[in-house]
Length: 436
Image (cartoon, rainbow, N blue to C red; front, side):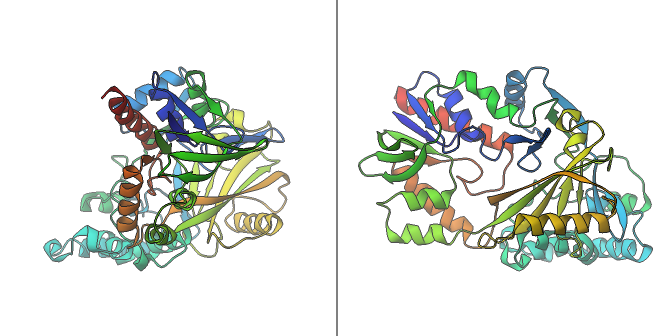
């Protein structure tokens, strides 16, 4: 028997692709999706922050489109950065036109300076994230966007982070692109998501829900309490009490530190490795305003420290079904250390003041709905300890019959598409073992 722990996208995909092999899937919540969920409050639909579909893998794109036939709409990305009291298009490094001339000059000259003697730069894997920013994009772009924005997001000095994860997320432009961007010339799209798909109605939760007709033996309200890897037994807790499940293999999608803590017979050295893993939490502040069209954008980045949030997005611009007539809705993201906690009332007031200062909201705007979700595990920190710790943990867990997959199971920064692909790959490996 295969146990799948967690019914987020990775777990659901594993179950979907295990058809014909006995399995059980156990989920702590009373619904599937993990952070790929939506909820409705006072007639407004919100995701657990922004969840947009952009595909790099043909097979996963085809799978998702088969699960959601005629339910996805394509959007050309409208994402902007608000700094120096000015909106510029994302990504910053190729869209500095419109900023104060001295800022544009700093960014342009700084980038050009990175082009001299590239062979003297150390390999990417040995550079800190801050070094990578300065050496790849220049002092000006670092100063005016990349460093302040990422300090707000990651909540640690960027010298503490590695740069081995940035290649697919942060585009490195050519000098022509940077010059064109300084002059306001646009001749191509940049970034990993110049367009995206999003459900026409229902929010992103329709994606995990679409797996359910093909998934069997799913138990909700089933929280993993402990695993004895030697005896291949796992204990789960629900409203009805505790129950024990015997297994041949486990596919775990829960956060790697939580999984290790629940494996009661792992050596202390591995527990210490898991305890060294770091992450950042996010307050997801959702608001609805009694005014139409407060923004025509999909989302906005806020690098400056005078704003408490690093990003705000507008669900009603992904799909009109997310809101109510005569109103607008928005989600706002504030990073924080996992040990910190701020009251909802204080957060909502801070967010409102910041949005008014940025001109997104007006003093006269009426908030018709407000809500806060605290996302405890939001972004994994890629510090210098992570690589070795994760590799040792995953190798030992695999040796003991546990495959840890998904964004938090592999302790990495990946997309919904990647989670689905990892579930598919885990199922393929297990099917091969079952057939052997």
